[in-house]
Image 1 (tube, rainbow, N blue to C red):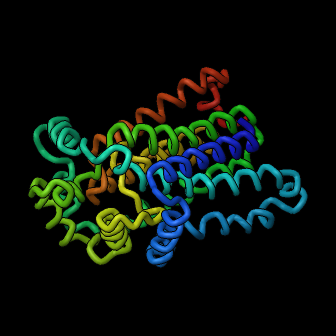
Image 2 (cartoon, rainbow, N blue to C red):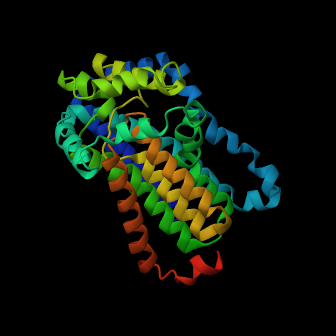
Length: 327
């Protein structure tokens, strides 16, 4: 998959998103206007997450690469840049549409399985017990702002810096597979809200202790806590703001972190350990914050790793690459 192919695939995904929105609504233009208005209302909160600054921030790359090298890659960079923006728009539309297509149903089963996998204890309880007294507020940006960089701009980074065509094909395919395969298709199959919204959705007190733990944690009053509140408000009101859809299973956060580690393994072995630590932290924070069942992250990590193995064999990447470094 070239950058042009990546761009075309994203256009197709966006077309599906718009068609799905049209199918769900009586008036497509009115629905788009309402979603745009709701997005504007939440724009301050969304902007603080860092997403809107990542891609424009890549404007400094010509200074890093030099003008000649950047000009040689300009077309590929423009394809990647535009595709990344449109991909997030399409994903946001479809994520917001999930409960209208498949009403949230899977949380009771996921909660039971999550507890069973961890010896009869909810993973969030382990996370909060382990970190009592820790400066958790300092770690929260790793889950939000820092994660946003590879999540929204990895293809642009590849377009600017990577000369290996096979590796480019593999990682563009994996990147699309995460957002479309895991974040849309599998999310529809396992439509769920996660522990933090479980009681509000089902009218129970199954996670009342989690709610209290979050109230006493650094999440309360933080940007991440504000986004949690905005997500539920957007769902409950039916506003349809882009970027504020709810979907717990599987964890796109963990999937992107796994992809980042695998990319580092092929290109910069010196940073692999840091990448693994970040992956572990993202998985941990996904549970600590209540956004996800631990199961959500396990499934994502295994799916991305398995797909990477398959693609590596398909494109005949020698195993020695991981031992000797990138080409």
